[in-house]
Amino acid sequence: MAQKEAESPERAAFTDHYDKLVEALPIVSLLPKFISKRIVTFSEQETILAGETDFEKRKRFLKHIKDHLSTGNTHEFNKFVDVVETHGGSYAYLATDIKQTIEEKRLEQVCEQEPFSVPHQETGHEDTMNVPALASNSSSLLMSPGGGVEEPRPTNEPADRISAVGNEEDTNLSGSPCPTLSDLIELVGSAASTKWYNLGLRLGVRSNILDRIEQDTRHSDDACRKMFQAWLKDKQNKTWNDVISALKSRSVGENSLADELTEKLITT
Image (cartoon, rainbow, N blue to C red; front, side):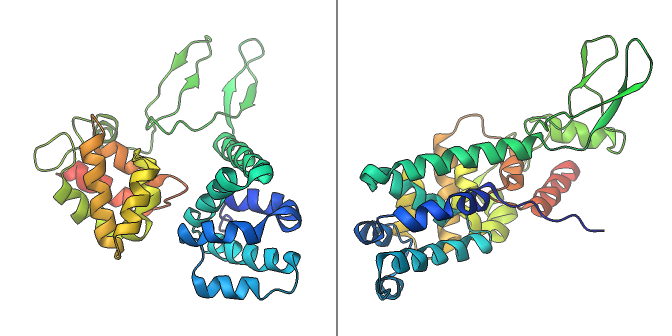
């Protein structure tokens, strides 16, 4: 049976705080900010303002945000939260509460992992433990029976694959230990250009730089190229591991592309 895809932390937080938002969000005063951040268009503003009461206006706007989340687009939601936090005045607490919930949901998802069994030191019986996934390493740290820490190699991965993914010097293209702009555009940009903003955030590009790229660029392919240029310019010690980890993050969700990229790096 196929496993149900986990709900994003942003969508879960939106659901948890919907009642507060629909009751208290100062929608009329914030609409100009939402337009300037391209969260809503002028035509969408007209639809929102057509609501007879403030409550109806809030419902129409929140449906717009919900529709974005339903398609997996968390970028617009995060921009919305930032606007409320910055310009919401006495209602900025709504954004603070949402961000706290998002972090809590992310932590819950990180800690959810299939249990594994280790022998009990005294009885010899197996105890079940849950260990959080470690995104920065290709294998998990397990407690040894003697109480120490060991780092086993997964049995379903060949040794050469582990070496290529775990060693930054081995994961390279064109004979270079770090990605080049042309390689990034060829191997990543064409397939993930629609998610360039979230990919940039995961790579560590500052949001103000990404916002400027978004304002100045009409096409996602060009925006993705400019994002990679900013990343290559500002971030030190860039590796393909950074790119692969960013692609596999929940906000980007390009696991298949990350796996294909890993295979290409191994065979290069």
